[in-house]
Image 1: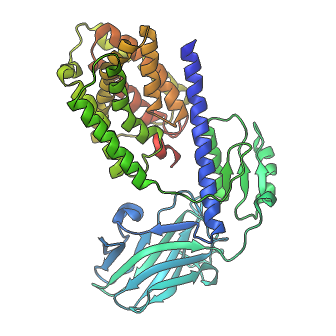
Image 2: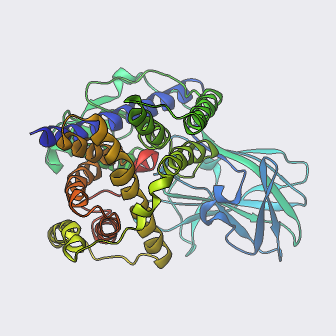
Image 3: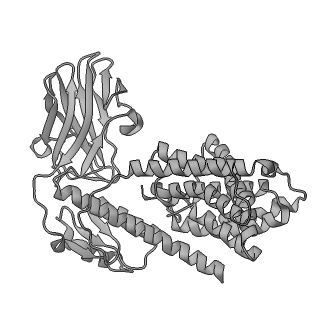
Length: 486
């Protein structure tokens, strides 16, 4: 009964976290608009800030302090792709602002493309470039757009691609630091542009519900009550295909203009104190009944802060890596006398077979809900086997033994470990629940065989099968933490 309650609670927790994230995102977006700040902005500091981390054409891209420096190799045009999280609304945010400087006279063109593989539209001479130019402000509505086949294009609207097309002489350089989109119109009050989306609506009912928002720049959509985290993000993605600037919030919520706040200095201070505490616990270990609890907290605090705190985004950060590595290193140190358990070979053949029981379940889900498998890189497969092995060592060797020391019953320790394994996949609700159920089984297997190796193999096989054939369909993704919302 407790397992069922925890299973349901994990899905509820994922939905609450996802709803809170959507509300925070909407409030930050509303604050930017009310403060007349760009809604879409690109800070160009490293090559990775461009699509494909390079220029399309014969040009070399390098970092240059707080900007990118692009050198033309042969004087032919090259393009710089601006990353787009979902879509751009060039109809309501039609003013492109650029901070750049060219070392020689040249020409700046623009390329945009709408959804559904529509033809790309080009404006070959959007603005001249001169060494005196430091900034440009280009109204996209004033440009003449042509398709690649020389046909005329419609006025800019919903775009899923935006590129700068640059032509400068051979060996000349362009230094660009930022790009942004601005609007020239005032937005109506939220109460005049809000829609409560109906639950369990058919396609026609949903279309009728959103029809009033057809020409709104930034409508407010409230999601239905009681939906899962994955469903929230599915609604978000569908709505933003048509309204890229839409405010999408959970049921009953109304966003307020609350700007983003950075607590980086405070977070670093907390991380340093955490590492100091771990060092103290290693040098001066506490004796008695408190010791297992301190070991558990020391191992988990950093990694859980990174994952459940949604601090693992598109790219790793020094703070996140430090906190995560600190907890993992502490686990290795406190368990250093028992490290051979990591590679202990099972004593019987059945110890290899029992942990593989979830594999047929994964295959059945693939048959029922899966898609054509996509190939996984060999390096990724090998790395994931090692990562799964390490995760199971942390759960089953480091944490399970300590929970057994402090819990009155072995079953409670099993539930605690399985719950933590689910929380390490926050806020991906379906993955949290699947991992909780699988880990309960694997804890039972480990208590019989006391070998981590076959469980790590079973974990990796299940995860890789799901990634190849279920991810992106029945299961939204295997991503966790802040990456789940991308």
